[in-house]
Image (tube, rainbow, N blue to C red):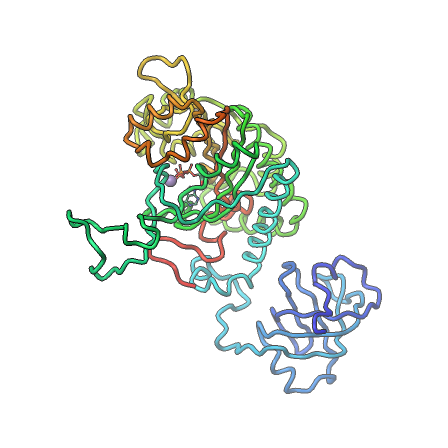
Length: 484
Ligand code: ATP
Ligand code: MN
């Protein structure tokens, strides 16, 4: 058996009392032919391994280079040096894998995030990405735990779909037809997808919601957690072409129940990370503070990362209607001084990210839930509110906006009344026949129900303080970029 090691995170939590241990990991630094800082990915804290002078042959010492992998057995003793509580006095040392220090691109110095993106396959070996991806893991785990504790059923919705029902974004096409111009054609010259693999035109999914609703109207409460694809040709710090989304869908929920669940959910997973990743979050908090030193005073966050997360745990989100938000924006000095790039034209306008950020960061200074949006700017399946003034039809939609990120959640109560739903579909030209299976939920025992989608990477951004979404997913897919 090879794997008789203790992980460094676990080891560092013990008292140094002469215990014999085996550790394995990668060299971060090696100085004076005597002190190895060893990292095994379980924590950013390295284990200091001490080599007695003269004990190991010169050839072995030469092979202890940055990122070489080692197996070391020895005794744990209290450290004589500052900065760590224990040392491992090495008795045996085996080099598992050499690393050519001349060619290894990560030097023990600060690298820019842009540079690290170009070597995304190695960036996990830095402290920043070590912390980010351990936090990402914890959030994913907490998400399953949260829904599991509540009795939600985890549902796997398809990745390949035939519907573009939602119109949530531009889609990636899935086909096995030749792309060299020889694909079978219809009489009008368009491609004949009847000849394609599925006998129809298919795409990568932009959302699992419609299928999720089918689950909710049988199990009561379900959630999905899977990859989602949008061919958005926008190069922003919060859009990916491939991202992960969590979509709970609940029968017997109205809009308020939906907001309550979303708030409880977000707090739960943040709390989990605070409890399980304290060190990583402290590291990231410091990293962010460092990074912000380069910014002018008014561009810096008012709160540190940990402080911000604690604030979210201890304060309710601000809830206000779209209509009230428009009033606040219209009356703001920011607007009067014409500082918005997109002027606030009034009720009915779609909010731009600068407007959302103004509300969250300048006006309320905390997460905000906006609800009851104009029907015209929201999806067809959202529940039409009763008793709206003429020309001011709203739907029971809600978006959660987070400081520094903008929209992290989009959700709604769904339109459960078949007639209303079909009328709306016809109004905006969505073929009712194609979605016959979706409409069956309204035909056979329809119920009030609601749900939302949380963009996982945006949540990871929020918790880690990383400003670019490319730095919270292992191998980002963005326009013009799919290396690794
Ligand atoms: P945005 O206006 O920011 O593009 P959206 O309105 O298109 O968002 P929804 O369709 O409501 O978003 O999707 C639900 C959630 O999925 C969003 O709140 C967001 O957290 C996340 N999301 C949407 N598009 C992307 C993307 N391209 N990359 C990463 N996350 C995304
Ligand atoms: Mn979008």
